[in-house]
Length: 480
Ligand SMILES: Nc1ncnc2c1ncn2[C@@H]1O[C@H](COP(=O)(O)OP(=O)(O)OP(=O)(O)O)[C@@H](O)[C@H]1O
Image (cartoon, rainbow, N blue to C red; front, side):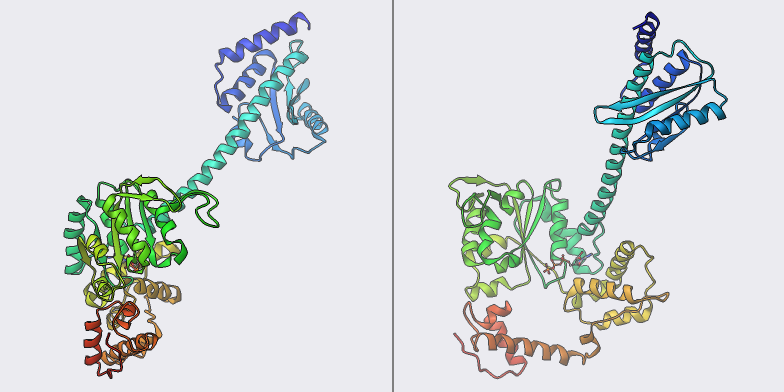
């Protein structure tokens, strides 16, 4: 190595250090530029990168006149660089040019073509190699930063999606315009949220039991901890206990690894046992034990796990009637029914139909990315004329369908077919009659007992009998 090249190497090192390059690609690139302009009379530097097309945005324009994305497999890169260099000599009227290859162990990454005012003795091979190394680091940083930018963009999109999902799951604004609902949300829920009391939330399907449960959790000291909901009626019969309490590896065929149950997952948080009336008797016994002892045992395990879980239960069934029918354990019911909340069906709170509709329409409109059409008086009257057997959930479905089908300026409410065939109360009575007949047919006329029609319908046998009497149904049922 000649003395001039070792001097320039030392100077280069000093300079790069003096420039204090840090871990940002801009400082790296600027350092390169400073080195080039300090040591040689640079007219232009054209850096050709075999990299992502977005690289140009990242390199400061002071350093480079062009960043061209080429495929890494480009074999003609050197010839390309020469051609560019020749063009530079021509267009920039430069006296000389230097090509700095940029390569790492994986092969060529790119090259910098430098047009010079004049030939320079200082521009030695060693200096060019040093520049190549600096540029290589720059390039690596650029690639890393482009990747980070891409990941950050992806995370940003995912976060937005998750926020949207969460907003759907946790309605920030709960509608409570009816006096009974106002009492539930404004008085009862905040009151029970403060303590760890077990709450039994009753109401027909789709009335908003889960909404109430989530609100209790949100307002409770456990709000930062998990809220887990499990639909007891949807668990396959053989998996109820392992779903609730977890299992050890090898506990049963298919248990290939240890799994935590919902109780463990809800540790320190809140567990909503939805459709609790559907729990089979064996799981009811275990649940009672867990509530009483505050600890659970995984299926196939011999170790008890202490639990700190607030339990909420919900059901559309009449659990007291199920106890009478011996389909639900009385002792478990007493444990769950510490604080009952009953949500009225939508047909009994039609005064909040308008507020609920506006709330749901706004949510749907946001989801579909369109504005929420105004509701005409006719539409409101139509909504009020219907009995809403599926409650708020059915209202959501009707509004979604109506919104999708409506093309005009106002919303045309499309009610389910059965509503159009309505014949006031007699239709409801006919439906109730049909429902009881079906249950009696299924239970061969038996009213009482766990397999009786009353248990199937989730009502007390005495209630069923009085309903049958009121509907003028023949007593072909077997009483007890
Ligand atoms: N008061 C309310 N304000 C806003 N949205 C509500 C309200 N009540 C119910 N909803 C909406 O209605 C739908 C049904 O409510 P939810 O799931 O809580 O009913 P549910 O009684 O738990 O039903 P199921 O018995 O079938 O589990 C949900 O999408 C919920 O957001």
